[in-house]
Length: 154
Image 1 (spheres, rainbow, N blue to C red):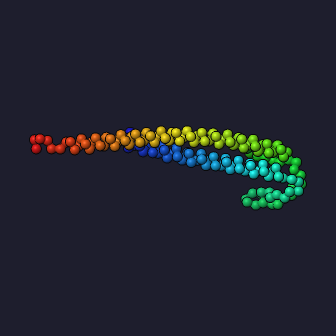
Image 2: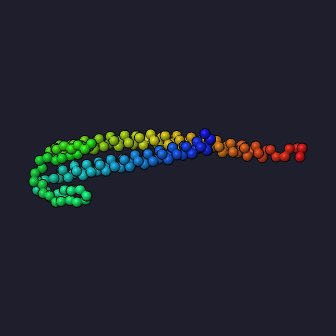
């Protein structure tokens, strides 16, 4: 593989890594939004009382107003399409646990991002070294050509 082809391959690797990093960063933002949603739910549960009027989502951006008769059980999504019923305190605890799991996931994703950034840095350094070597070779070739002028016989 020629030096130019290798540089192109390194450039392509860098672009792929940048794409992966962007995807992972979007994943982190999505997880943070889940945490924010859990915080909002915890706040709502803390202030929820019998006879409170709430808006219940129906889907598609539609809501219905409803009055809470009794706060005996709250359904909390646990993940992987599972949900469970809890009393008020248990629901808040389940949401706090969910937030902690999301924190762990953010740490994992950030670690992946750091690894990719380190790999990207190594590739960039390799590409810079190759470019410098190519420039030095070109300079040496140019100097060699200038030194090959007409000989003393001419």
